[in-house]
Image (cartoon, rainbow, N blue to C red; front, top):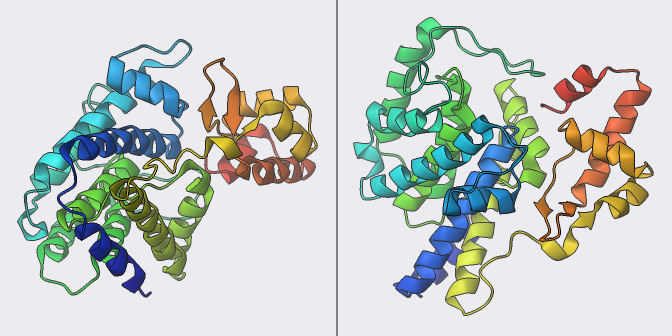
Length: 326
């Protein structure tokens, strides 16, 4: 894959550095919320973007949401703080302790017995045919991973960060929190090389999971690499727009989001059906307005069509969730 366009955009961004401190603070605060919201949403957390911001910025408790979901938000934000403290290091200086520290924060107060510890039990991903390594092999696989991570290489920074993400999540060294830890490591490596962190959007969740699975089952890595590269490019565009005095917040694209009635009409189903599928986590809420209206990405139209197709095959709710990676 060619990364020349990313190199050019990074060079353009470097031309504006150092950025004004106030702008840097604004960007960091926005990315802190967005990275926390998206990374958790990929794993099934139902806090919206607005709710995530309220939890991590103001310590507000959101009614109807579980303690675990609140902890996932605050933990991820704190893990990002640790990532930012590690940026001064070089990749060659990273240690197993650094990765375990990040993971420990992800599971803090949620699964303390498994936090910052390699798994000693077999694991499977719901709905996936991928077979994860035997737990007995995890320590040696992680030693090999650390040797690769800290060795000199000629990979493009974005390719290197994506490769590290892929390798770590494929080892699946932890009982839980593998995806979040892998995405945080990926972004740590990007930040170390002067790139903004890459955001895997919630609308790309199925494409992201599918690309990972195809590669893990022996298929091509091209879809996954392209997805990571596009995520890195979007972040570069956000920074460049901010440096040029334009809007720094290209996400969320609120103007393109749909209210529940519009989604129901476009998908050819009833509003109560959309509400039910949302409550069952088959559909993802992209945002919530100040008046409390749920907003959906247009991508949820295709999700509705897929759910209808699976229902026509007489699959159970549990089977549909498995097919969707829930």
